[in-house]
Image (tube, rainbow over all chains, first blue to last red; front, side, top):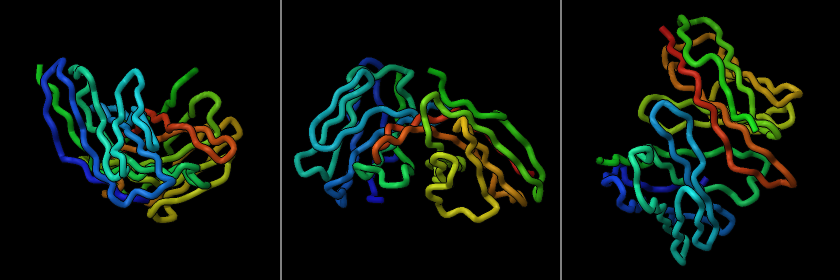
Length: 113
Length: 115
């Protein structure tokens, strides 16, 4: 699986936007960019995914660079409940015969009140 | 729809013992994956089951084994427990249709402590 690089930690203030970066310079043409987050004492939770175009859902937005070598997860208004470890993961489009997710260490997001 | 549930939530075992962890997958999902998460690390893939057959395995020894049942629930068995097996064990369910996979839904995990 192609690797991703994320900052170890980031800090934000409540109700401010947060931009979480991810570098994936070795991404292949068939890789989707997935984001999961893990709140304290919980299992990971799916956030969003995309291939080439920017994506929006109720939780977040995903901005993908034109060359697809980087992406940014955007939380439009951070809340205290958004404090979590955020993982950026590359997945083959079809998943093949194996839907494993390769997690790195992710970015620990701290949200200040 | 019901979510992914795991049992037990916490467990303490002695080195050398065997343990069985259980997972009920989300309704309608036919694929279950197991992950091990050591403290301060991201989850590591153990193996996946699709329609009751093992369908991919990570870098874990054979003493880690599993089962998937006709109702798509699953078990993770670990024999000859070692101290390093202490971790959070996560189950994730997803659905595969025509070769494409939905996102994975994770349970809250089982915290295993080996003493």
